[in-house]
Image (tube, rainbow, N blue to C red; front, side):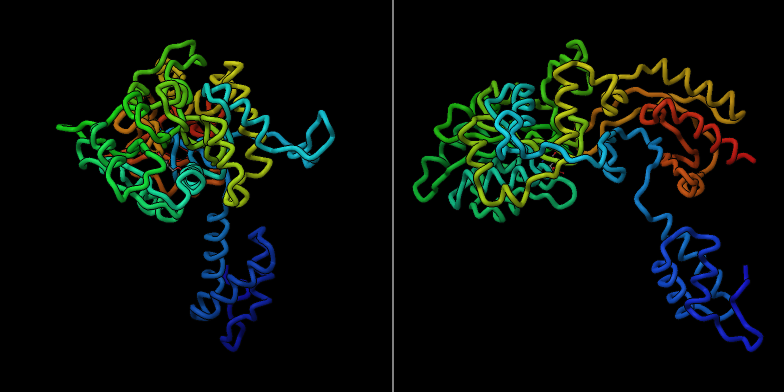
Amino acid sequence: MNRVSVDTAGRPPSVDALARELANRHSLPHAILVDCARRAIANSSAQQVTQRADQLATEFAQSLLREVVNATGVLLHTNLGRAPIEIHTSDRAANLELNMLTGERGSRQETVGKLLALLCGAESAIVVNNNAAAVLLVVAALANARDVAVSRGESVEIGGNFRIPEVTEQSGARLVDVGTTNRTRLRDYKKAIDKRGNDIALVLKVHPSNYRVSGFVEDTPMRELATLPVPVVADIGSGLVDNTCPWLEGRTPAWLANEPAARQTLSDGAALVMFSGDKLFGGPQCGVIAGRADLVDACAQHPLARALRPGSLTMIAMQSLALSYLGRTVTTDVAFWKMANISVSELQLRAEKIIRAAQVGDVCSLDSIPGAGSAPGATIASAGVVIAGDHLTKLRNRELPIIARVKDSKTYFDLRTVRSEDDHLLIDALRNLVE
Ligand SMILES: *Cc1c(COP(=O)(O)O)cnc(C)c1O
């Protein structure tokens, strides 16, 4: 490896010579290799400079965004981009804002919004960059510097610094705390609304996605909140569109039992629901606002809407997903629902095949989890392969990295989150680990 490292006088190589040497082993742009060479020369001895530069280039290549195999059993893995999606587009233009009937300027939200509204049983819907943006926009547009009432039990932080009090404040509204941490009843909301000095424009109900309080707890159901004299908007979080799951022929899986759904929350009287596109909806990163047409329109007209609008890739992916839901084909063409719907016996068969081909490992029963704060506490029975030892680093360093899970010095591959087309990659990796 010490091809250019030290000349006869013991001097380090020039940055340029070292960068050109690195190009023999790393297919990275010259500017990046120059940077690696420069850092290596600055920080290592003449003898170690080539080795160090190689290491820096390898580390950089490994840090690049790329495909990985998710064998963790976490269906919506936050570190792996939540819902995996497939987008087919070419570099042709798309009619993002062209009205095809009139030939005039149109809205990117119109058709996708219509499809989402149909799915959720809403009058209208729009898509923004994520659910945090949806909540921000709803509060900014509808509370408009007035007060927003939130139950103390729902004034939560949801991963990655999404904190209800701070989002409300950033929207220019004032948060009014209602009830107590563990119990908030309808009369607490009524009292807050009646109190002189409050100017409550909106009640915000938040699904505390990523944790669960047990014991002496009570929240106020949407049906009761809907009797209040101000609009009630609900951040339902993970974006189950309908808890009767018509796309699963109406068989709602047990793990979804406690998850709020857009259609039912709206029919219980919410004025709006907000949810993420990349959690249980199974789509790209985005947020959906659905409900009363006048309120959705007020959000769409707000100046922030322009800053929060998604691009054509997101809108195309959301359209294709909404069509899959409406056509009831999600279990064959949406990765998340494919993963969620596959039977344990099928996973066991795949595990047996993998083990037979790799000549190593055992079949094991596992519990997958929905992930990304969806359906907290719920698990989905699964199966996979287990081998002795912690092999995470080696698996992660493969050309197509495999992200597995380690417990008690054993490495587990949960097959629920692995595409069956990728089973051969696990076979290769397992063979490689025992060689
Ligand atoms: C996940 C989640 C958010 C944040 O959504 P992003 O799409 O990540 O911005 C907000 N509220 C709830 C209840 C959530 O579950």
